[in-house]
Figure 1: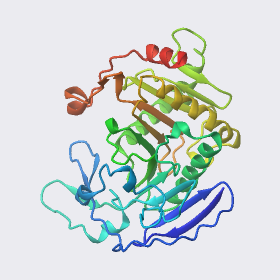
Figure 2: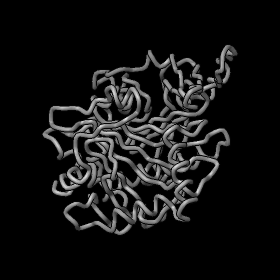
Figure 3: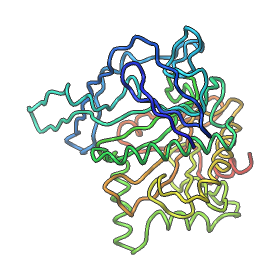
Figure 4: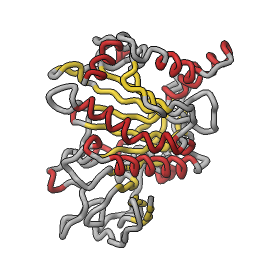
Length: 360
């Protein structure tokens, strides 16, 4: 992997990742003002959850025409976030970030009531998987998928090196039904200054399991799922030498798959070489199965769960892939029970979903 770091016209960082040395000297010719954000993090007094308020994002780019896509390479007078005429993988600071260090200068503390408020510091990055606007991650070859994995890993290491960052979250939203506002194949990386609510809850559950059994919860879950591989009621979708993909026992989404490395590790930076080499084949296979679920490719979220800082041994790196679509023409909406009290209701048995995905 070859990495080139440069700056956009407003001072934001842009990083090119190439399979080998590639000249990257095109300058951003846009007349942009210096980037600044004004986010704040408010703590819910009843749950302790951190909620980010980022009102400046209301003006962000929303479903532009394909010929005005800000993630396509720059060509002629059509200038985008990528100054070069082509690229392999590119990562840059979001122009409309939910979290940014510049937020520290814009927050005024609210002292009334039992409330806590802090600046919305952190970092939000955009990861462009390919310069091809019409492609998707599933269309990539294994070499390009590996380059994306290397970019995720590099960014995780650099962002975790910042003592103000507690959790690095790499993810992809695909499809208008998910809420994607740019059609170009891309993902995002958030560097949070706090441990996210679901991760904090998972930490508590894993710590309780360790105290009660002396064993790691993620090891026990993976062993239980792998033990059923080959049975008709198995939730395993695919079991490779270094990775296992399975539908979780208490799946919340119609089609939801968790992908675990068979050797537990904390985050992408500590993933071993064998698992890195095998990941592209296994992950592309899963994405292509999701594309075959319905007549049109399924909208999905793909989310890397990594151990937050300070380091804890209870959690394990894994990827969560799920779609909101439950049939070809029906979505799984977060309605009264899910949105109101966080109680998920799933219309498809996890064992049925796993069998469907295995058979595709």
